Image 1: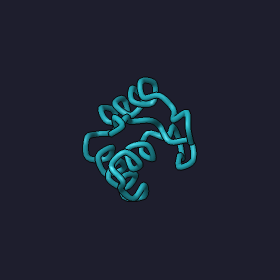
Image 2 (image 1 turned 45 degrees about the vertical axis):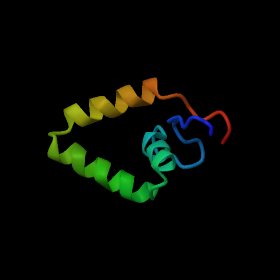
Image 3 (image 1 turned 60 degrees about the vertical axis):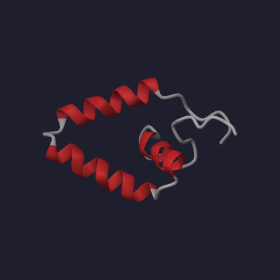
Image 4 (image 1 turned 90 degrees about the vertical axis):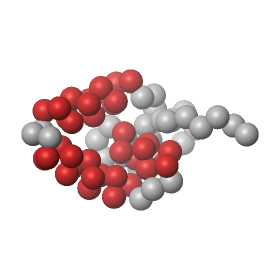
Length: 66
């Protein structure tokens, strides 16, 4: 069994592909991941979650296959 890895999505991205990559990894609907992300950004006072998103954008590699 191949090891599952988290990648940023190339085909399902709006900004950096982080939400699309998380949706692909867990086999979830990308729209729901984006809605939850938007809610978390609002509820955490913008800065902490946006900083986390930017770090994930820089650290998580882009999917080389798709």
